[in-house]
Amino acid sequence: MTSLDQVVATFASHLRSARHVVTLTGAGISAESGIPTFRDAQTGLWSHFNPEELASPAGFARDPALVWRWYAERRVKACAAQPNPAHYALAQLADLVPQLTLITQNIDGLHQRAGSRNVIELHGSLHRARCTVDGSIHSTWDYEEELPCCPNCGGLLRPDVVWFGEMLPRAALETAWAAALNCDVFMSIGTSGVVEPAASLPRIALSRHATVLILNLEQETAARPPLFTIYGKAGEMLPQLVAAAFHQ
Ligand code: APR
Image (cartoon, rainbow, N blue to C red):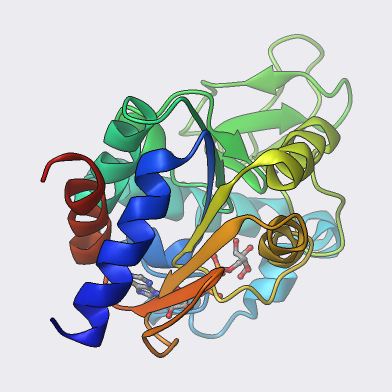
């Protein structure tokens, strides 16, 4: 048995007996679907723009049409992409454990397309727009318009995503916080864990003696219960973990 096999087997045994599993996902889980991460998206036409300026209230106030063009392109790419085995493994896991809370920092909608329900979107969604005047939420709007307008009040719509310097949606954050406090297994997948407050969630879970797994491309594989780290691709490792826990 390699050390990776050992980590998978040991973590799988925790997963098998878990009552409440929390998964926190980031850009890395969609990388194998071909969705570029935030910074990788700055290619071609967009390479001259600073993403932190495009994704900010000040950037939108300065040039809303430019910001809408950027989000429209990201939305088209997300719609063209397909969920990968990591998204499907998490959707399957929800049916295998008594309770699963799926929290994501991604805005691409791929978890839902893989079949996950009740996804907690901390950073909003590419597939929704919000009226800057009356706050109403829209799942369809005139995609041809440079500056789409609210069908209710005519106000300017904006992407329903969280921009730099903005608060996270309160209800989503509270649910995520409560889940981290009350879970017995926490899995952080494909996130660098540098953006707060999502970065605090695994620490909260650890402080409550949950078993925590960090899975991304940067960590070294190690088993130091209750903190496990696996270096690997989510699309390969998650199906392996679910199989090791429930199908062997
Ligand atoms: N499998 C697992 N992990 C992966 C894979 C993969 N195939 N590919 C990349 N990763 C890991 C990387 O090792 C890295 O740790 O995913 C992580 C991606 O980190 P970020 O690009 O920082 O993404 P994320 O953590 O989601 O960023 C958080 O910051 O840029 C803002 O608002 C944006 O929601 C985003 C937030």
